[in-house]
Picture 1: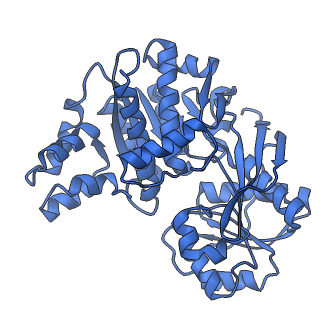
Picture 2: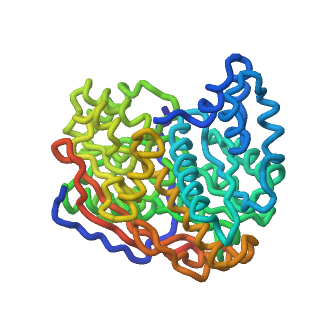
Length: 449
């Protein structure tokens, strides 16, 4: 556990509209999927450690069901199975470690989109082909996976990463190679501060940013619940610390103050001492930007310590996830969260995606990352179609110059290549997820260096 205060220093939100509405009302991971077809434990371990595995190799393994297929064969076959006339798309995402679940959702969402696109005839007569690399949510591993996709798999485009730290590390790599990076799940504002006119011409983001989210949550907590004293308990990462920096920035605007501040590392499981400190701090709510897998653990320990329903969580940590509500529903009571998308979104295209995803993956409910990668893959395919070419320069221009329809609304990239997207405010009330508002905002970017 890390306890400290961090500094801020980010740009101002140029304008933000917060609309409060009336109250309303798995599958295995990719490596496991391949490893299941190998009987030998050594081979299985080798495959599980593999960072880059082509979809063609994985399909071959599944088709043969062979116990004799070695990890080396799968790896060496990655490029040779690729069809030269296919559009090669890469995905960098965590497949191992604490964030592997999110990487699995991202992959399945992207696989579904590619299946839909290819079954409809592809893009401009060409099929899409997916390769992916394991970032493990670590910048070093993410950079290695990105280089392998570019140099070995010769991808034209990359989606990635779920983790902001990895995406920030990937940006100079794709910039040097002239490969277009479309981010679909990292929310650290620095990613697009440094993109487009900010510097990295090949980076685009079709996802929300932490700055607008942090301000919206603080505004709702103050204006609708009267909270002014907050404890911080967030993950120790660019995501967690970056979001807290923005929460701290806007607290004075809403008469708020931080009375306790702690950060946890991935894999930590005992939060009792820090929760006891928070319980005695006078905090009225806990600002959390954390890992979805950790939230139920923290929630159960809040129940043990008698904090459930008394000191609510606000921010983003999958408070509304079904597994979290099942495991620690009492602790989620009163939780406030700003999110990009939810499965019950009243949108025909979104509901169709949920239905198709469940049918494809054994009834699994898609999460935010599944949707964002599915949506971004379709958006990229539309850009290729508009460009009439898969040449990166032509697709880059198509993304800059056009608007795209999505399940959450019309998408237009600004001059920093940041998509302007609405955000949904949720609150957990009596165990139910309630939509309490929507948010849109423009970012006043800092001057370029």
